Amino acid sequence: MGDRAKREGEVREVGHWPPRLLLTGPPQVGKTTVARRVAELFPGRAGGFYTQEVRERGGRRGFEVVTLDGRRGWLARVDFPSAHRVGKYGVEVAGFEAVALPAMRPLPGLELVIIDEVGRMECFSRRFIAAMEELWRAPVALLATVALKGGGYIRELKARPEARLIQVTPANREQLPAQIVALLRSKGAPA
Image 1: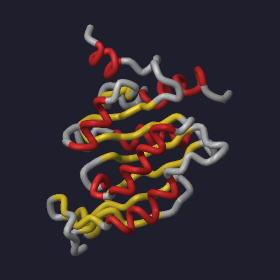
Image 2: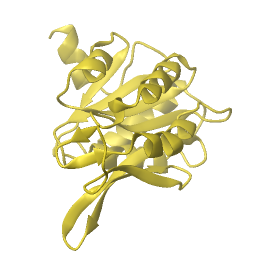
Image 3: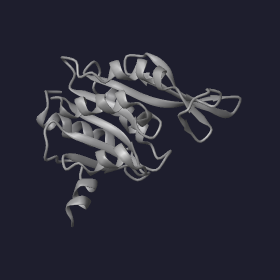
Image 4: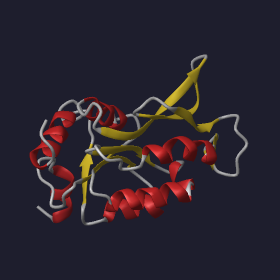
């Protein structure tokens, strides 16, 4: 088995501490759900944010960013005029930064920072990429969801030797939160 296959298939070991765990997979496979369940198992010891769809009248209107301490803001909306677009969505870079960047700080007492997600919309923010780089160097575990496809920073992040890629599938998504928590607790602070 090649090094790349080992990095993608194993959840129980990491060669770098604190770990840099990257959940990847196709849209709607459950990456955000896995990340949120891991956060629930680290109450008060995890920081970061997740993204979620905003639906109105049966249709998707956009995406919002929600911090683990409950702050919310828009990431992208159908009706938002922006030079930064992904499909029909205008990306609200300033609004995203105002909510997400403070949540990315590796504050004292945190054992884990969760970033959901590193995708095209988020990468329009140079400040987000700079914050990711600071977080990558910080002495705290990192769990990030990363788009399956994408160039630039997305590709670069997944190619780093210290990154442990974890492919989320319908077959493993229910077990992944417990496996990730066991990994984090194996070398991290006591449960």
